[in-house]
Length: 290
Image (cartoon, rainbow, N blue to C red; front, side, top):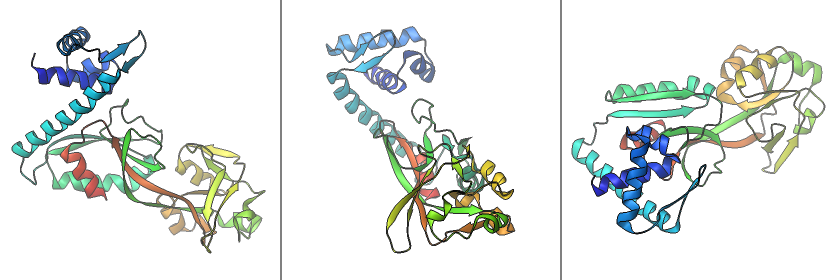
């Protein structure tokens, strides 16, 4: 086996966190991963990984070697792509995850246009409101709404995601008027369960001051469409991104309230692992979406 192949095995093992997953990605037997790692450590004369029956950790030497090897493979891949492809020709597959409603209404048409312009590229879509693990679940790219907390990931801002408070016209007649956020106290409200604190709604007032209203949602869901259906029947008020509300607003089934306030202040990000090479087609897709 060449030294470059040993490097590939080592980097893949570190990023997959298990020999079985690394073997599956590389298309080799589990035993081959162990043999090649043993040969690599013997050749270098240092221990790169500390292993137990359940966990695997990099040693200090292993972390240094991984950082250098990851950059080496990135440069190698870039060099091959530059030689094999012209400036405009892209090919290969991209595995992408995105929120369900955002994917259906906004991102899927854009990505379909991207594939039309680059026939050599295919995109595998995962549309789900679950918070996927970018590395463990094997995604090349994830579109995520909210705040980035994981320092092992790189995020590029795509756009601001505007949120609005909404309810049915009948709900306003029964519980309104709503002139300030405090008017929401004591009325039925919904919460988006994927948020850490579904009952905390931060806002910026018309004069630029920030605040937060704390509510007790009676109904929770991890999907905005379910909350919209309940709101249309006058069962409560909610606050969620406008891309889920456009059709209900246009038809008059729901109306926006407290529109002078800016809610949540979230952004849409394109997220990918810091330690994994993002292909040129992946970078091109992000640029296209932005």
